[in-house]
Length: 150
Image 1 (cartoon, rainbow, N blue to C red):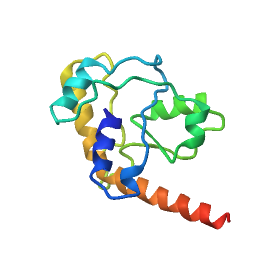
Image 2: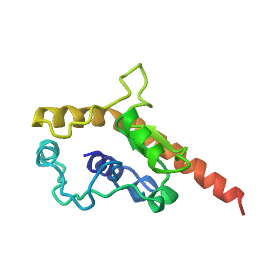
Image 3: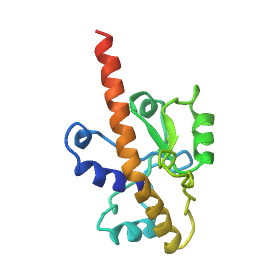
């Protein structure tokens, strides 16, 4: 759901954000599993089709090539840190950049009913504007750092 929402948001931006590659990886998933039917239904209600999505586990290659990671919960961040040594410094909670004291965690709806998936989706939607700003800042910081290497 996060990948679908963020891709949708990036598509509305200009370059370079529009051109960024994004993908969803899991810290506790089986490879190539289809999206949960409740996730598909929750996303279709906002006009985003994730029927073709398949899970993929986190790998060292993904870590090496990522601008940033955004997790739903502190537990997800802890699992990432457990699986990847050293833990990536560019891992954050999706909602940690929302101003005004919003809850920083998004409860994982895995195994729950459609209303939980819709609530999860809505929590992610609230995070998208702050994520766009964060990703843009990280992109420009990385670009500046890379141009300083030459």
